[in-house]
Structure formats: structure tokens, C-alpha cells
Image (cartoon, protein in one colour):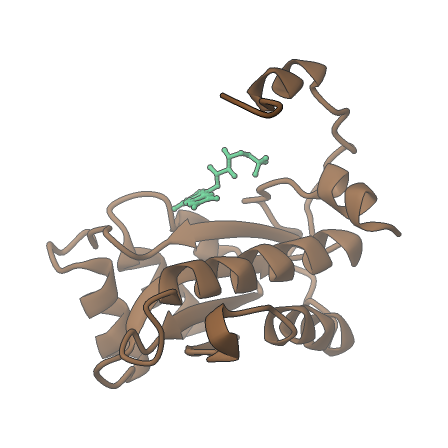
Length: 174
Ligand SMILES: Cc1cc2nc3c(=O)[nH]c(=O)nc-3n(C[C@H](O)[C@H](O)[C@H](O)COP(=O)(O)O)c2cc1C
């Protein structure tokens, strides 16, 4: 599958079949993240893979709303970074997330981005504080996002390209 094809298949999937994500596919998704470019190649990120059912259910509480799909997910990959290593840490983590989501789509694994940075947990703590406490993330690591993963309940149809988006492309000047 080429990259544009994987992009056409990538959808935010929040409902999963309950079937486990095969380890070989999870390993490919992690490899896609670890192959990511980063500013000055600093690679300030760390990835925490969560598969424990009780932990995934607890993690679902990391947001007031927007993380509930973790109660049905088979795995989550939590992306954190040390901001002292790179001032591009947000961009670096975002590339990791996007690459992992693309590989998930190419492998037929359902995924959804859960925003962590600048978000609140249901209990009033920041999502970062909630997740750092639950997963023992040391300072100065900061939470960027969580990728929820599971085998799709229903396969998402390949999305056609919306030609109207070409209006967002400006040639030579804005
Ligand atoms: C930076 C970013 C943050 C997002 N945060 C969440 C989130 O916290 N919870 C959620 O359910 N979806 C989240 N999403 C998924 C978007 O809602 C989704 O990508 C968008 O609605 C377009 O749908 P699609 O991914 O199927 O194309 C996020 C996506 C991005 C790129």
C-alpha cells in the first residue's frame, strides 16, 4: 500500500471489535513511530504501551470527554517527551503520532488520536498530571497525546479525496 492509500484509509476509529491487535502489527506501528523525523534528530519522545485492561479503563478517565474509547481499546500508546531536549518536542511527538496512525491504517488496525497536552481530566487535574501519576512518568516529561488502538468493529470505507481542499493551496503568494 502506498502512502496516499494509507492516508485515504486512515480514519479516527473509536469502536473496536474486542479482538486483540496482533503483536506483529503493534510492533510495526511502534516501528513507524520510532522511524519518525525529529528536530536535530534529538528524538525527545518516549512511548509507553499500555495493554492491561484495568489500566486502559483508568486511562479513559484522563479526559473529561474524548478518551472514552479506551474502555473498548486493546492497546494505547502514550507519547511523552522531554521538552528540555528539544524545543520542537510538540512537533516531534505529533510526527510520531501521525506516523503510527498511518501504519495502523495500512495494517487494518483502528486508531484514534487522544489529545493530552492542554487538556483536563474529569477529576479536575490536567490530563498530563493524571497520566503521569497513573503511568509513573517522571519529570520533566510532558504528555503530548495517546493513540488508542483496536481491531475495527466495522472497517471504515476508503475516503475519496475532497477536491475542494485544493482551495487551501496557494501558489507563490497567499
Ligand atoms: C491533534 C488532534 C487531536 C485530537 N484529539 C482527539 C481526542 O482527544 N479525542 C477524539 O476522540 N478524537 C480526537 N482527534 C480525532 C479528530 O477528531 C479527527 O481526526 C477528526 O474528527 C477527523 O476525522 P478523521 O480522523 O476520521 O479524518 C484528534 C485529532 C487530532 C489530529
